[in-house]
Image (cartoon, rainbow, N blue to C red; front, side, top):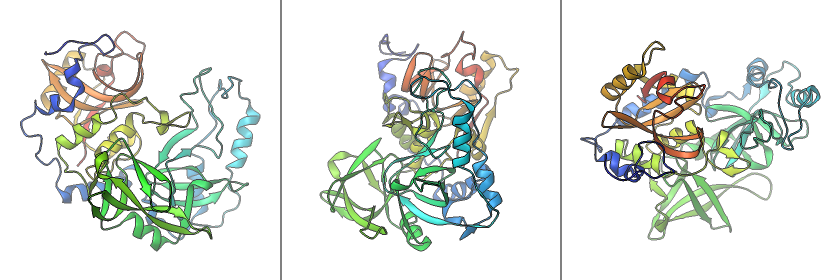
Length: 414
């Protein structure tokens, strides 16, 4: 192994390993297609059925109340002890009020309203910004934070909170509550034309600033698509949703400057070069449960993989267990296997770029060095906080055990 290990790096990791080029130089054909365009389309079309969540724009004009109630009931009060942002214990009254705020009365079909996200915004388990932690003072892990949606992502709202401040929405591959102020509404045809534009730009930077002709700027994160107006020497010209004066949808021109190296026309090639290069772009960024850490930009483990593959037009579902179900299994790790057997199977059978899921976590496989497998992942455990490269010995000696001992499978899209 070349290079010198730094004290702040995980065991066996050298500085050279912190560059995607190190891993790409170790594979014979990094530019060979992982999936054809047809295979990508087939995978994306199969994901909703695999996880049991329909595409946003496939919802009918009205949704049966029982289906909405089932989505609402997927969120329930957490067992004690729980604490608020001040470290005060939460009682049953707190949860009772949240449950009432998210309660659906009646059994009539609910009209579906379609919209777009005006900015990167949270998807919450209940219609509140209250922080709930399961460990005293651990406000970095707000357990009501479910996910985030990004600029221009479509939503389908089926009910409002009593005060109108929140909308219960189907977002891409996720149900949850989104702040009303972060959404703009239009009819299905307008939203579909925007979300399914025949020409688009894909954000390839971890995050990209977009200058707006209407003034100000917008922010989009890696893997997000925006309808493409054209290209100039200044950069890519895209359409960005805004709220019109009469509260309807307005589409304004935005510019992603060429010198940012932040976006491409269409998608990146679906190759190992794309997957590994993109997975390293957020290297060192802090971990963020549900994509948001006390309101700050970030990614958790599954969002890192989702955003990485999205730059190649492959749309993984949001959560790690969903990603495992949606993808094709390469190997399964039996609970009776020793770590030596697991390591041998992984090194022999699993290609770089595969997803390595386990209960509560998921990682991207980079390859092996001297028979030792390495991964890139976003983690908040074992003394690390953020997107890191590590081998699979992390956690050895802890109650949960090493990452290697906890693997359930290795899967790939397709």
